[in-house]
Structures are given as structure tokens and as C-alpha cells.
Amino acid sequence: MVGTAENFDAIVIGAGFSGMYMLKALRDKLGLKVRVYEAGETVGGTWYWNRYPGARCDSESYIYCFTWDKQLLQEWEWSERYPEQPEILRYLEYVAARHDLCMAWKWQRGDVSRHTDGDLRAALGRITAKTFIMPMSSDMFFPPADCQAEWRLIPDAEFRPIQTIDGHLALFGADTDAISQLDKHLGELLATKI
Image (tube, rainbow, N blue to C red):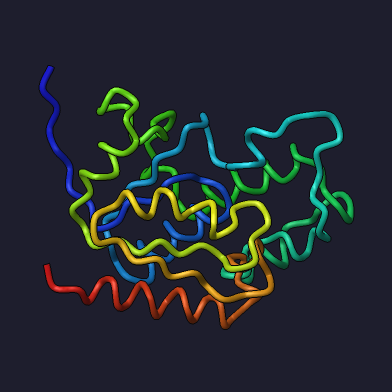
């Protein structure tokens, strides 16, 4: 069966906190047509996959929220100070439904190399769009060094770490400087002539 090619302005890999934020910002702030690829069956990223007994947030619940929905910040009531995995996943699923984020996702399609027989070099080498790799500078879960191997496989990609001390939490909106850097890079990326 021959599929119909779809064109998108942006592709986001992963539907965790960062992927959800990127989808919302690119779609709602910039009006882009976005596709998110996620290997899991629903949103959550780390909070979808890590279901071991006792899995919980190591930050207080009020920090572990999206700040761009002020009404939800007031409405959502966490059951405890450091919520467990099921409650965090419920929160993310609620946010996705509330902001109509699920329509942009292709579930269980997170492997970008599936069309190249698992050859990641060939898959990333096929990218022709202008690409910025923007890890958080102090992210202990996804440090910039871990992104460099893939960055080098994408032709003409630029490596632009976001400077922040908030690490993985920077995209929750608490670090306005990190959000400003991200907006600046995205503005420059979108202004690139094709």
C-alpha cells in the first residue's frame, strides 16, 4: 500500500512534558502544523514508561505543572506534596485532553529509523529541514552531551543548548530566561528561508 506523504512545519519527538510544551507553543503561539511521534500508547514520556513501585516526583507538585494554563494551576489539586507516577500521568492526560493536544500525535511511532531498517545514521541523514537541537544545559536526564551524536548525523543541524539552571524542569515555564531563549531560537529557525 502506498501512503500519502504529509507535510509538517515541525516534528517533535516524544510526548512527555517537553514534547507537550513544544506542541502547544509551536501550534498555538506560532500557528504551525506539527506532528509529534511517541513510542508509548499515551502521553507522559518518563511518566508513562516508569511504572515501578514507588515511582514519584522528586520536586514538589506545585513546581511540576505547566504554568501556561493559569486556570488549571488553580483548579488542579494534587493529592500529596510529591505525587506518584499514576497521578502525574493522569495530570498529563488531562492537560492533553483539555488543550486538544492528542490530535497531533502518532502513537507507537517513536522510532525514526523504522523506514531505514533501523539505521539511525541513514534516517537522520535524510532530514532536509533546517534543524536546531536545543537541549537544556543542565538537564541531568538528557544532558547536552547525549544529544551530540544524533546532532552530528543531521545535515546542517545547529547545536543550541538552552542555558538554564533548572535542567529538565526549564520547559515548565518557571525559567522565563530559558523560555525566552527557546522563543528566540524558534523565531530564527522559522525565519529561515527555504
